[in-house]
Image (cartoon, rainbow, N blue to C red; front, side, top):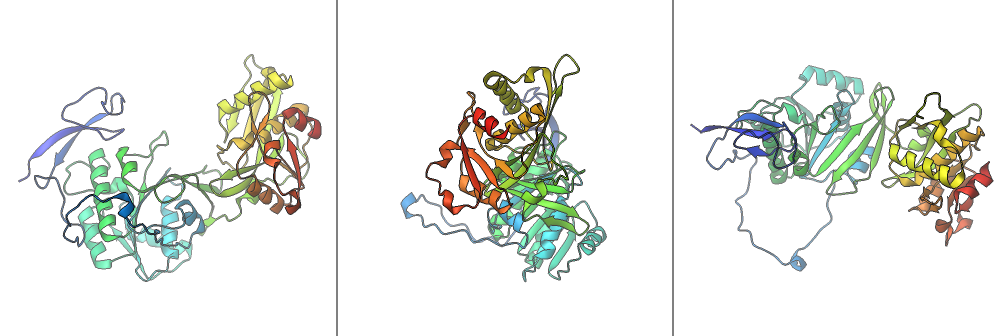
Length: 458
């Protein structure tokens, strides 16, 4: 019999300690050590063979110049948005972790991707949360038929690997990692040691079999991925599926990607038939108004490789209470306070006695600093109660002295504004140098200071 031992694990980072301590020595968090019972199957702690592994060859060091590289061969999925956030497709042998709030649509998204992928090798969908009948009902609602999709309702990792040996799928989907149990760990499902051991076994399975594994995970109440932090280090790609359930749109964001960019963004619309990829999100992010309204400006921003036209809404009113309010949605509050200070100091606008509310339409969160010129113009439009033309867009970063700083990839922003029918776009003067204006059918107006924009628009 294997020897049973007890250890303490940090619920935050997964650090193991032989005794309880109030403060984790690895991450510095207090009161996160939890006692768990561990039982290893053999003395060296290795689990059974999970695939037909070949005998290990003797490892030796190589000069970096002697190593031959080749381009990664990717498996192209039918979902264009999922391919975008993965960097152009899923790499064989990679491990993808996707996390999101309950009910946001994680299981629906990957079941839909598995149903759409009509590959001869097939897909193995493993669920530890739902029965096969429940998954079949959801698949019928999607309206897609795929004879090469296999369902397995199990939580034991060795059972999953045995079925994978029989089916030999081209893709393995796990829903979810918190429900799996390894026979080599005695802790309950969802504990730090169980999640870490199950993730390690799935990683070894993916690397030895060259089958990509997609893992669905839960998040905590503060929005971080549940489980030890080592889980995010072990996988190759981490995706965050987010969105307000009161909105129909969902955002798939890349947090980590060893095979692509970490700034990509995929947008879906929740419909009755599942998740519909949104190919042109600029049209849905721009509200259609029957009459002109003040406090509305159109910004040209970039998310990953995709240019987006989004609507910035601002409301400036007289402060009823003693302390003026500053409320934002989809924007950093500290950045808004900085812009208000610049307008107060450089422009002479008395925002210190005003309540300011800023919202990014569509429920999207923007981190691109080039949106600041549109935020400033929306604030001034509401402050002056004057309407901005609806056929202009703005792009530029605001400096502390009121200057408009240059942004990157200005040509893609101009092309996106022209494609959506904008008549003019305000860009930083530094970006206008060497720009072939004759190639565009849109009026390009370079500006250098906030005062210039104010004089031209108001």
